[in-house]
Image (cartoon, rainbow, N blue to C red; front, side, top):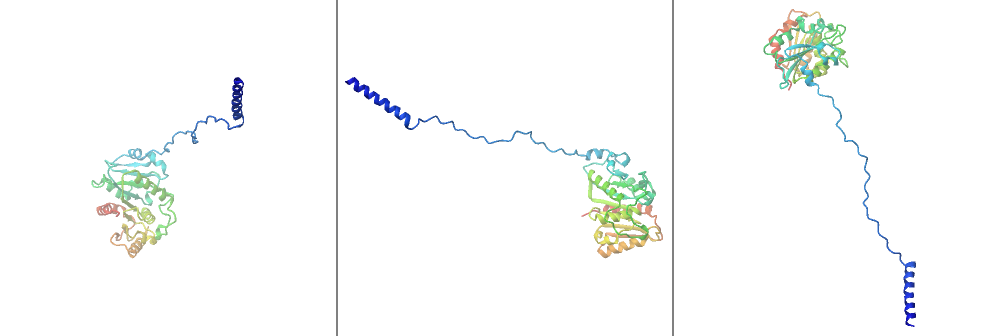
Length: 305
């Protein structure tokens, strides 16, 4: 009997376990391991490199120039940038550690051409010869002298009228000339407060034209027998200007520069503007003016600011 009771108790225990497994709460399963989501990343790319830049050109261009001499643009690789022939004078013992004044010389009608020599060798270019032969200036001044072709003029106008009206754009040759000037003044060690204009006849017209277009660029101008635009007088009244003109000039009338001088004075110019009449003389006073030591001294004493 005892065995029967024990058997029945064992059977009941097994039955309760079976029922719990079949209809009760399911057994827990192993939780999946917690993971941290990895943010999406772009595919690796090569590191960025600095954009290519043009190599500095100043040192090669400067070493291309001979010191203490005129440099003919026909022999300069840098001249290929421009359609106009020109000469550039670099002082002896030029050094980038020093800032140099620059003379921008604009020749007259008789020096036009393509040989790139007459603008610096004609008698009218006396000022250039004086500077180069002067102990005081030959090692101190950079000179730039472009040459206008025979078929064009620095300023397109009738010179016999005496004055003209400024065009919207400069004549093509003058535009190229100022580009040459800007190029070399940037490439060389120059003093922006000491840029000077000097022009004979047709070149005098060019100087007036450039002053009117760029009144803040030049420290002084020497005008020899070349006239300008009267309407520009108020804009250039503060510039240092020395006008030279023969009173019986039959090529470019003296009255043109006399009117310009009066217009400048009316606009408020003071002693900074000078008119020197050459009594009884005609158009060809270029050598006389260029040989005047006072003209050189006055010009290089002028300074912007």
